[in-house]
Structure formats: structure tokens, C-alpha cells
Length: 272
Image (cartoon, rainbow, N blue to C red; front, side):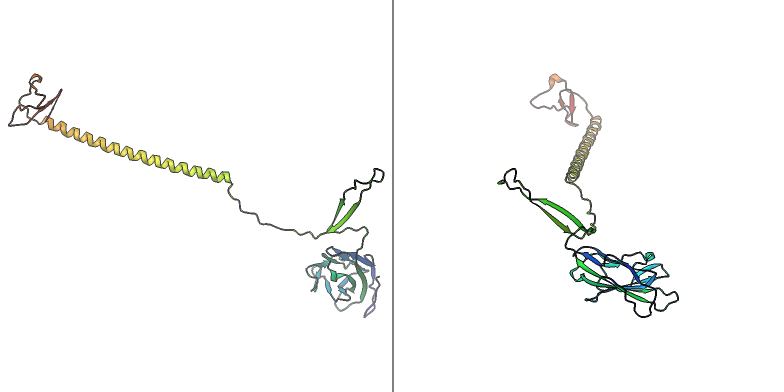
């Protein structure tokens, strides 16, 4: 039930409409307790009659908004849910708890232009558990399941037993950080093969450089020795060359001029 009780200075303000005199809901659901008066108001308080839980709202003329002032036991779940231009002071509770059920009172004080305290009216709304019926809440989901059919029944007596389960769950938004991007297995294998190929290529390059350097040094050494022998041959004072028919193979050499040099004939070449 809901009714108005003038308190203090009697004024023209009064409660003209409520939600349904009895508000219904279940644990975990959202519910709106509605209270509307016939003119603009300045202060509005919702209070649980038996438990004393309260939530205070104030109209701020400077900002043009309704501000929640004190709401210690309902701060995380309750907020203003009405339209001030329609003279409403509604309390929206997002997630009902067992302790929220019971009688609530709406205490509204009218707006005074130049300050001071205005007239006050009260209204009462009973918040009860919903035992059934058609209702819709932001957190309702309907699930229908069909159980197995008995095979012992005749075709004419065949019956299907159905059960309907209504579950209501609070929806939460979960934000997850994006996981850092990691290399896939194929990318890792490709990079490994590339590194091995570079190492092998570098080893081959160093090997060819070493072989080339060694070959160059040996070639230079042979050229220097050849130049030295050539220059020395030019300076040998040969007085007589032994003909081929006088060459003794056993000695492999012949003294031409003992006082000078020994010349060895090797085929078509002479060696000192």
C-alpha cells in the first residue's frame, strides 16, 4: 500500500503515483522503487523501515542534476533512477539482496526558491519476493529442457514431460589485457635455419680466404726463388760446356773448370 502523510508545515506537495504499491523481485535481480509527487522537490530520501538503510538525493539548482548524498549501505548497488522533470524520485537497486526485502518509505521535501525547509510527504512501498508470473528484468534468462520419453507407454498414451527452469544471473563485463604477440613455431624454425645458414656461409668464406692467402704466399715465394736462380745463372762464369756425348750418367756431373764452378747437365738445362 502507499499513502501520503503531511509532516511539519502543511503544503501543497503530495505523492500522486507509485510503481504498483507492491514491488516484486528476487535475489540478484534489479528493481526500481518508484515515487512521484505533483511538483518539483529539493530533497528525497528512501529508507528501509525495519533495517534503517537509507539513500539520500538532493536536487542541485546550480548544476541542474540530482546528486546522491548519503547511501552508506547501498552505495555500490543503488542510484537515482527517475526523471526530475516529471517530479519523480525513483530508487534503482541493481542487485537485490535478501536484506533488501521489506517495507520502504519515500520521504520527499518540496523545493523552496530562496532556501529554507519545505513541506514533507511520505509514501510506502512493500518490496516482496516474486513467486511467479510474467516479469522481465535485465538479468533474466529463460531455459527450457525436455526430459526423456518413456518407451513403455503405448502410442496413444505417449506423453512427454517437460520442465522449465528460470535462472537469473548478474552480467559482468570483464576486460582482459591483450596478451603479447609471440612468434609461432614455424617462424621460430625459419629464424633458426636462417641463423645456421649464415654461420655456415661465414665459415666457408673464412675458409676460402685462408686458402687464397696461403696460395698467394706460396706463389710469391716460388716467384722469388725463380728470380733468384735466374739472376744467379746469369752470373756463372762458364768457360766450357760439355757436349752430351761426353756426359757421364753415373757421376751425373763433370768438372769443366775445377778452379771455377761445377756445372751439372740435366737434359737440356744446366744447374750450378
